[in-house]
Length: 246
Ligand SMILES: C[S@@+](CC[C@H](N)C(=O)[O-])C[C@H]1O[C@@H](n2cnc3c(N)ncnc32)[C@H](O)[C@@H]1O
Image 1 (cartoon, protein in one colour):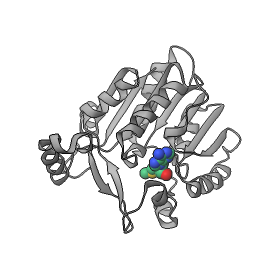
Image 2 (cartoon, rainbow, N blue to C red):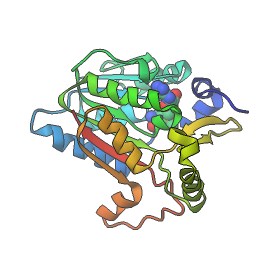
Image 3 (cartoon, rainbow, N blue to C red):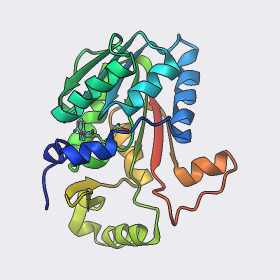
């Protein structure tokens, strides 16, 4: 059954799949370390905005890693935030974390306030229209302090053979698909939502359009090459990970 993004993330057993207490993945830790290094010459990372926090998995990891005094975490799904609030109490980080139900494209205030903004675990994959995605990058820019850092992950058009071929074919008809080349149905548990898969070039353009500097993007294949680990992109998601600075 095809449904809308918000509707999908309000469903009980969709939330259950997400509600796992999990350590940060190696590429998330890589982004955390990089963010610390980039911002470190100014001060420590103390105020953090998390977009698409779901049930809070990365809030816990981010709180442990950066030990910030303030986190504002938001999600489009009310039911996700309810579950997240329960988790924050269990993890004992409810005193430093404020949660909100809001679409990331509408979160524009407070300006110049955060040292770090995160859009992890491919929240942007579920934002199927380009205008909203670029609006979210602009919002991230606006709420960051000067020199603040944005980190995130998105799904990649290049990965398994089938996925790569699907998007290559669509790219050949880009005169027809236009900005919708990266759109593909996704979802699970029998529900389908319209998704968006980025090319590295397209991601660079969208982040640049929001005026960020020092943009670095790696596919997981490239990231694992950096740390000398073999990654089989024919089997993995090969997501794109990114870091940029205001
Ligand atoms: C794959 S889940 C990841 C959740 C969490 N970041 C994690 O790593 O466990 C994607 C999340 O993005 C949220 N989301 C999707 N579109 C959104 C939007 N436009 N604004 C805010 N949150 C959104 C969904 O509700 C969902 O919780």
